Amino acid sequence: MSENDNKSIEDLAKDIKAAHAKAVDDVKAIAEKALHDAAASGSLAESVKTDADAALVKLNALTEQFREFEQKSARAKPGADRAHTLGEQFIADERVKSFLANATPRGRVDLTVKATITSATTDAAGSAGDALAPVRMSGIQTLPQRRMTVRDLITPGTMGGNTLEYVQETGFTNSAGMVAEGAAKPQSDIKLELLSTSAKVIAHHAKASRQILDDVPQLQSFIDGKLRYGLAYKEETQLLTGDGTGQNLHGIIPQATAYSAPITLTDPTSIDIMRLAMLQAVLAEYPATGHVMNPIDWAWIETLKNTVGDYVIGNPQGTISPTLWGLPVVATQAITVDKFLTGAFMMGAQVFDRWQARVEIATENEDDFIKNLVTMLCEERLALAVYRPEAFIYGDFGRVV
Image (tube, rainbow, N blue to C red; front, side, top):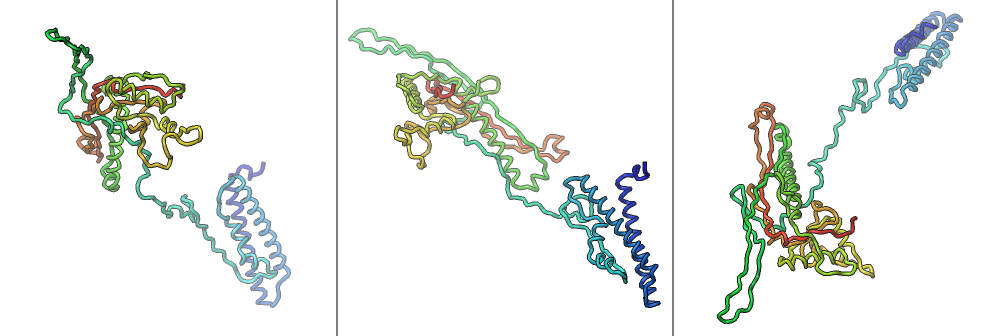
């Protein structure tokens, strides 16, 4: 085993580099001696020529060895983006090539090594990546937001306490009839029930440092808007599907009347089903004022065509707000696909605000105070009263099994 077998790649590189540098110095020394002899005697001694040839042969061999070693090192690191080595730069320099090509080299040649300027960010010569400035777009690219519309269908109201009580008529026996003179008048019976519900709180919060709120002026209004949107998102789901347990509202759908077609149609379409649901509400003495369905189901209805290929419910180029059978359509993902809710929203239900949606900012928490943090709290408190469950018809289109 040779001595080189125990050496690392770094040690071998140093040895080859040192030998190469010595060979260059030898060539320079011979060249200077040749110049001196030529100036003194007017001719070049044969021994000087022999030494020069030997030195050049050795230099060329070391240069080739140096180049081969560099190539092997590059292959050991595939894909590496490296600068040229000192030896490669020396051999490639045109002035060095010209000097070595002379049969009788005269003078001296210097090589100034300069690093290649790159976009690297490492601690190395030529690394200028840290000087590159990124391009920053103004504003904040926000996530998409759902358009909230269910509350707009319901009668609004306010309340001054925690509990909301209301009297609901649960039965009526109508005995009105024709009465002969002097005969007893029939008696009708009315049954009433006292119902109550309580205001529920919807809330969440976010934390931010005082420094970032000061440094990015728009951030506070952005957080404010996102927190309010979060409340509205949760509120819409609660108004429709809240199950009434714990701190949940008792939504409209859990209290609605199941759809039951009052009349039988042959192969009814989704449009026909919505008309029959309206009829069911009318027969309960509560004419419907709106429809709620998933956007997928509304798109299904909008794309229905007749036998000649015309759209059934209108021109796709129209700009009229979504309506069906003269009533507004609320398309929201808060309701399940293939389900619909039709009813007298204004008469059958009312939403009461105990606290309007609000955002409060505080640093009262000791941990927040000593860390320069700001807590942004967003909350609202509301109650939902469903006066007449029969005013709402909830059912399936029947397209999804």
